[in-house]
Length: 575
Ligand code: M6R
Image (cartoon, rainbow, N blue to C red; front, side, top):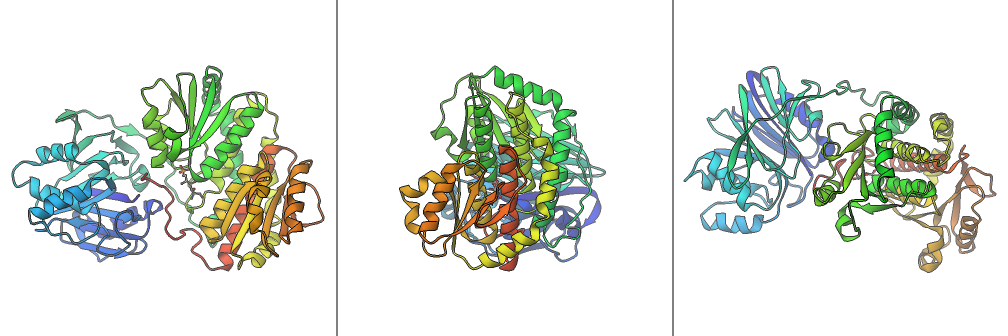
């Protein structure tokens, strides 16, 4: 995944200013980081982005890594340099044919210091620049290299940052006396609101004084690009009184949901109507999403089907294997970041087939938003914790609101108050978490609209509390999983009032010794959390919030790195 940043400035700046910007990209990966400047600083370390040696410079590139090829080591951290040390690069993406390139470069005498695919880029340019200029070397790179890349390349004694991209996101920020290249606008949104977004197969030469863009199409052709002025909340509130972003973001849910409802009723009303019209003109809706956003999409399917609209949800990484599309299919991408590569690739695969694309996105100006014919902003505000919490809530709010435009009745407008009232039960949930901190497995069962919720709670428990958890359809238990239920195995049963089948499934696990925990809007003679819901959409949201709080307190009890769990990144920008 990884985040990259490059700065070319007229005035000198501090190396640690770059580090501050890099920190803003840490959601893209945080296992190691590094920086190189034109005044000789070259530092890289394992671990989170942190202070480096003070160094004044006018040009710098930096990188925060989420390991793909090569272990998490200092050697594998970026930047990487050529043998003579004249060329230094940072890279986001994956070079698929790096072994082939490495073999070719090694045969020419190049020595590699890391296990990464990225290092071949520095050696490739060292080799090519022996016989041609930079533009021709870039053309060769585009022609030969397979995979995804956003690369920043600097050379000793040269004030230019050379940058080229395919697949991975890249944007140029135009600030006062300074040009900034980054994986997204968030890196520099506190410095400028002017940006030039790179499209596929583009190359740019960027210095403090200006920039030139080129499009690669068997050769580089000069290109004029438009500067976009974006609006972005540049202030950050930090964790405030909360120990972790996760808890802060859960507590922001009522406000975030109210903001979205208001926005869909007024500011984004036109867009919602446009989306409604697109659905009316289509034969079916296919959601494409990953992780938590997929679970929200499953709820979207449930809500829209109830409103009589044929809908399906497909996991983005399997999209092409499980869908048949035609020009009467509307694809709706659901994504917090708008940068999830699985989703982007799925959308790339259908571009040009006459299929219309809509999306629900949290991060404005993201790739998915820019790829969509209509994109609704879910207005959750910045989410820092790797776990999606308030953005899931807002995705479900948006999808239930959309279904309500087709007559699906729900009480979503009351959800902010309901979440607030549920949050008052946090102490009780915390008490329950203390009793679950040492368990190995947890099963969560649901049926119908509470099945996606079961999966979402399981995902939270896995990624944040490091507990093996399975969220499943209650009816599936007897087809195998029941064999795993032993004395004391915790099973969380999502039990909306009137769902007699899930009561039977709960009794099945109880009969086999399970410790049953019920989440319901009705009262049962079980260890339970009662949620104040009167309709399916609010049950889905409130039961999920119980799962979020439970997960948070289990993880806290276990002293885990709640906001940055091991091996993960907030935004998964590789396939
Ligand atoms: O940004 P996206 O919504 O596209 O991200 C999708 C998943 O990577 C994301 O939901 C992930 O599963 C979260 N870590 C879940 O908390």
